[in-house]
Image 1 (spheres, rainbow, N blue to C red):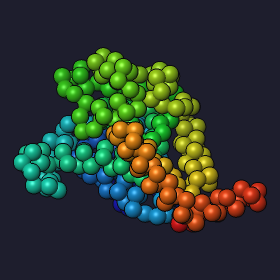
Image 2: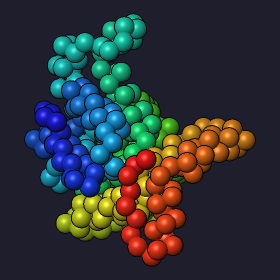
Image 3: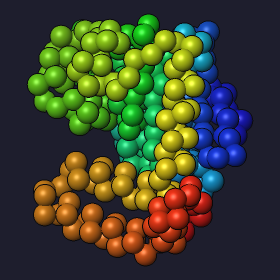
Length: 271
């Protein structure tokens, strides 16, 4: 797992920590980083030993948005994955879309540990995670409209899903920044802690998920929840019923019942 713009550590219990790792450029995203993020998210989703993703930034910045200079330079040399005309003209567009879609569709839980400012695309990366924790110094800038453009590549949809229409409209049309405590009051982040407590808190939450919930159940729950966002109630019920049947047939469901009855910690197999 050697990347140019990411640092990755995976523990034996399946907690994968991914650092956005370009502090000299304020952890700004670029086309290569987008591709690396998408590749790593897809790797985690396909790795049975990986249970939870924790996404954070190196240093004191989570992600400062797009690195325009690097995008321009790298965009000339990247080959598009698909051969449509827009992707020939903008070869990294598919990579940006891959990141947002991969985060939302990944079946493993994802926790954003927002260790400092998150601007533009940085807000989108945080919004793509299932849980967001923030350092007290974090600032979240959804500033697209102030630059004369719209939140794109899935960012608008992810924020809308997390905040609802009214808050998303207010934040987006103002093009403003939220302090960590304001983001907490809006419900965009679920906890605000001191910076040096942030990663330990994210890891503790990740390990709580690993220890408390069978791997298959955690994946099925997330997939059913994401599916329900975009479906009418009756269709969502049918999907959840199918997921529930898979959960009930699993060995870990039997183990959960036995462990509860025997008053002991469960041992998950992922089956």
